[in-house]
Length: 627
Image (cartoon, rainbow, N blue to C red; front, side, top):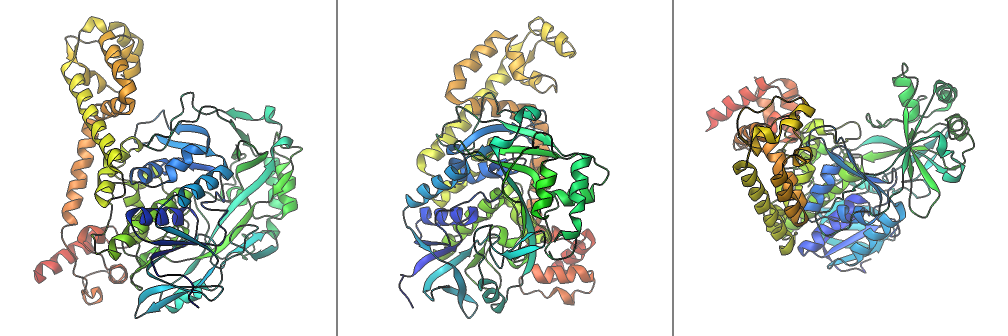
């Protein structure tokens, strides 16, 4: 049955990945159909009501710089904003917002409905239409065939999802929502390989029953920032979060439920997230720890529902209740909804190209948790890249791929394709070898020009970036030409225990000293303070960017040199027809991995898990013989 027109692109799934994929492709000019099981839950915050965090905040700013919506929606629905890791260097600074869960989804829907070229259909997709290994469209539960030139699947945790609470288990993609059945088997028939993963979510608690006087308050930043480089407003009033702690008593109660835990008795086969384990997993793996930190987070402006971050569990409800009420401040707490684990199908990402197109089925793209990630931010990043690349290929345009030295998004995709993942992949700053280049503050400088060339970022947006770059250079020149006399900073250096100056030096030289901070220096140098005040209203970010570029100039230079060396390796192409199994000097593992992934170049080959430097040397010799 065909009742809908043919589309350029169909996006299956209305989570964070699907929303970014659909809006990006539509804004580029493709006709897009977004199919979601429930249109009231676009970009639903299934787990914690927050965006950003360590490395994730950088990703949100990169999505925004590319023209995505996640940063804008996050800003509009923020109830608290904090910049994490302020005590560390700028490469570690990570923006994070607490968000109103309901407003977040509402604003996403409004933005999607105001996006041109974007249509909607509310139903379940059960099958894909494939001819000669080329995607032709999808089939819905009602038997409707919808044709398209490309399909992007972003089904999150819904494929054959099973929810576990103690000895109870039942089908579901989220609690209260049915799972998606049929699509996995259809993709398997088309040649894709699948496996199982597990993730979990904590209890939701009635905030009226929490004794906050026993908890540690965590207010937002005094001068809150924001995610979007567009003209969104920083949050003006904020709600506090709170810290709580488990105890040996709590742990003992939880242990009593282990015999009914689906995690420990083997009912859950999928691998869970290493870096966000359930509370029972924590007390089992870290038996020497007497306490674990919990973050008590409000779910919105106009709700009493509270999210207990760190208390994820699939233990029986009675165990969760008893343990929760042993936590100080939660003695009289009432649970709105128990914590649960969810097990679901995913498709190992080694089956994808860098564009997120499957190697087996042409014009079929996968993005989000379906390829093994965890987190709204990672999913949204993959979504926008899939949406861009599906549009590009449909229109015979160059594919859009970000290098590891260009974006955390580049690191994310490169890691997934080359290293794969057997547990939910989560981004950390430690995964990025060029993290001083990939700061949250310069995401617009790195990516907006690229987005503008694609046709995604607007003209006025790229003009703002160009003006910001000019202001940065103007500020750097000011710091380089303005000198300071020793007596002007004598008191400051005594206070900070820095070595005193013996002669006049330029401000840029002072800024390179580890203990010298611009805001303190301004208190002692009136001309500098006047310059700063005269320019900060125009663009405070440009001034701060200039200071970072001066202070970390040597580190930035080294990382750029390192990135340049790696780019040289990526110019050495690896022919796609090579059968690596015939290169016997390679290790057997390397032959298997290289044949499975089929790297485009030596740089990519060097990052494949199981391919050693010795294997790369063998491969270079082999290619040399072919040239």
